[in-house]
Image 1 (cartoon, rainbow, N blue to C red):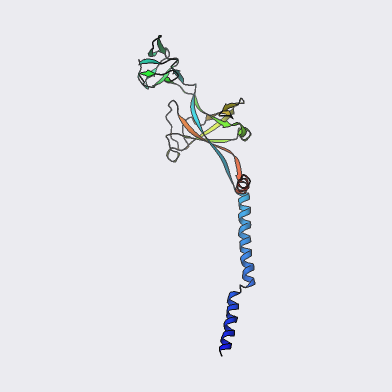
Image 2: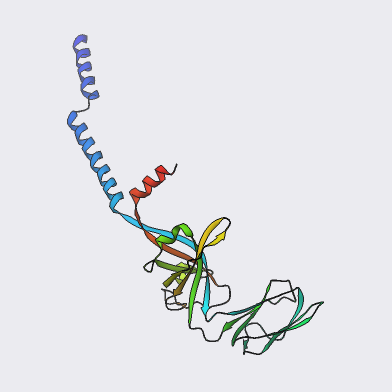
Length: 238
């Protein structure tokens, strides 16, 4: 009796502990199928390469700016954001060597630093032209990326201080790359200027108010690359 129970228990354990070969084949087939889907998907599904850099928004015609040629005391004769005419006296500089009178070179709106004393090289004021024909953005790209840019390159600008989630972004057009390299920190760069579509109106139909030193973040699409290519590049980069 005990021998029969032990024999049956041994057979039961053998049956329970043995995985059916059909189930193994099905499992391997499912795993292989999923793996192939992932491989083909990572090869065919692509998403854009985005290069992000800081940029400065400028006007056409350009704004007029005046920098101090020496340290001096300054007396402003005009108010901040006041409209001025070419030839108006903007300020007087008093230094130990001379007295200088600063005259407006263009018609426009005045933006002053507001400082009573200025150091050599500091900006004293800007004048934004009364009539602005258009706006453009200027930034620098690494020289090694020059072949990735052409007339079809898509560029969007997110204006600093105007969150994209609320205000949207501004599209760029008519990209121009200047051929003379500029060296910064032992790295070669190229200067790029991009005309802004719809002036300073975003894709959310909101207009950005221009002021001097208006900066943005340029998002530049430099092509597309598959997930598989990115994985292979990351593996070989170590």
